[in-house]
Image (cartoon, rainbow, N blue to C red; front, side, top):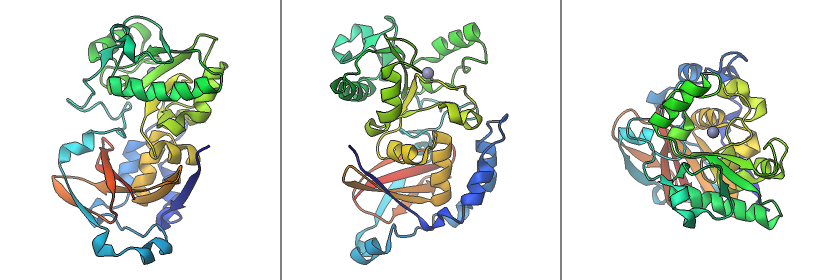
Length: 306
Ligand SMILES: [Zn+2]
């Protein structure tokens, strides 16, 4: 069992009412516009507080800072990109490494395919396999993938067939990003099948998140989809699960907090949000191996493993 410990930055209470205001009314789903209007002033830069007093005492500020050069286009690259009806897949930002899984049977480890057209990047297929292997260890093993990466032509086709209530226009679907997949069970509907229940409970441990849960339709603007999983990576999926955040809420939270610390399975991470309007150098008050992902709107998230 993974242990999650969250040490939340001091700005949490200050921004609570603001975060609540950012939630859209039930019929709207407009998260981004209000978020941008009420977020912290980007010009002021991140006000970084130590994760805890203990940490501050133990580390020397000059020795625990990293300078990281980032370019403006990094806002639109990475595992945390927000893609929804207000935020399209960036030009050239979609994964292009997707392969046809039917023709790459070596990637079919622990799951079947609904048909022979399904595409996924080898990297995402491997991450998914790791997760379903763990499920198989608990006797849950009837997974099929019904959709993975879709190029814009395929998305456009789907949109015309299904209509706006059931499909997103080309460029606005997470499937066009290459980090999402639809998962089914050969035992029945995902809302009832053991596969759906297992993933809903455990996907976060493997970096995945149920992207459109039933209780967040007002935030996502998308009806409950018990089959659609999105890769965001650890430790983000753990924080999202702990707070019951969907990606819109998590990115708004990071922007408001500007910093979060988390320990997952004995590994400690510090996470920083930085607004990025142009090519710049980030001064990150932590040291360790790190990942950078854009949020696809106005900044980047730097995740440092201490
Ligand atoms: Zn989907």
